[in-house]
Amino acid sequence: MMRIGGLMILLLVLAQGRPAPGKVNSTYDKTAAFTTFKTYGWIAGQAAFDPAAHKAIVSAIDAEMAALGLKKVEGRAGDVTLRYLAVRSTSVDLEKLEAIEKQGGDKAGADFTVGRLVIVMEDAKSSRRLWAADGVERLNPAVADRDQTITGVVARMFETYPTRQKAK
Image (tube, rainbow, N blue to C red; front, side, top):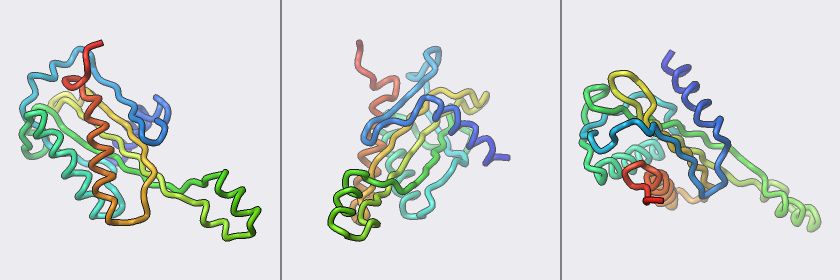
């Protein structure tokens, strides 16, 4: 049942359209008092397949929440809850594929991995969605670059957090 709830949230966020790689889509409840939130807890989402990537994602989000002044507590004991949903897919660079085909090379060289991360914040009591951010990034196959990429994507996502948005 939790998996269905997570998928429903993902579908709601995805309805906004997929952001271009390196970009972030974000939405928030304009009636929510974000400056009053002091604590947060984690609830189940759609974790990254790779446990090391999961650990890096949670660590990066925890660091951003701490920078906002929020303290982590267990589960729904806080003011808000957080969950993330991660999806990894393979895409093809069509220009690179065409060049490889002309040279008679291995077409697999045109493949690349794309990661999509969705962060959802909800009111801990009502489960009302307060903020969601959706980011897509082309992933470097080198594992050593993974944590740096994740930290960068999460930082860009938190730039859209309502208390960090620049006045228009």
